Image (cartoon, rainbow, N blue to C red; front, side, top):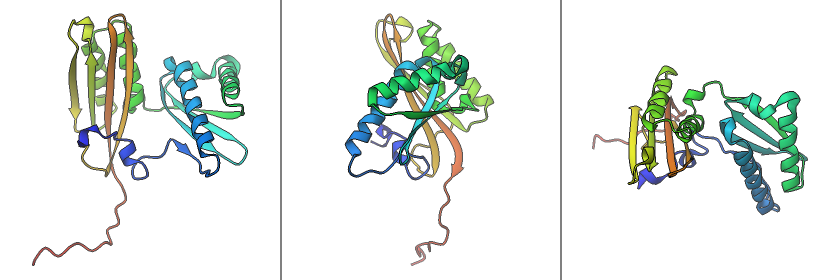
Length: 220
């Protein structure tokens, strides 16, 4: 059943960082619901902005929302109007002011969420799915990542029968926690139904293992 585990959640605190960083025993439920509302607003309003991830931090009297995106200009807007509008919408939803930081994703071809979004965007424009995925694989190869896996499922190219196809370039070691695996999924809404896209990206690099732990004696 290992293939059914979310690669990011399985590595939290090990090779992946938490998306929400705060601690509060008394108001845990309220804070959790606020985080959910913030993420839903960003997901809905910034669907075309290629948002890679959203990190939320809670300080003493401030909520900081850091949005990582491949298209920062689309979020900021002219003269910062886009960010201000987003702040007001979040404030109206949760009743609290937030600070929004925008961080540009420097290597969008190596980010699973951005790659999934780009594939979905092309499918919704009626570009053949194989061409969209081939472009993503080629871009990932040029960005020198170590491996990428893409699964697409649904009525592909409007076929009468839904099916699932898998594309792999390089290696994607899902059975080890020592390596960081970036994972994301997105959905394309088409006239013939929804098409799901899942992307796994392998970025080489091992965690700092404690070499001082003695090895078991196998000579006996």
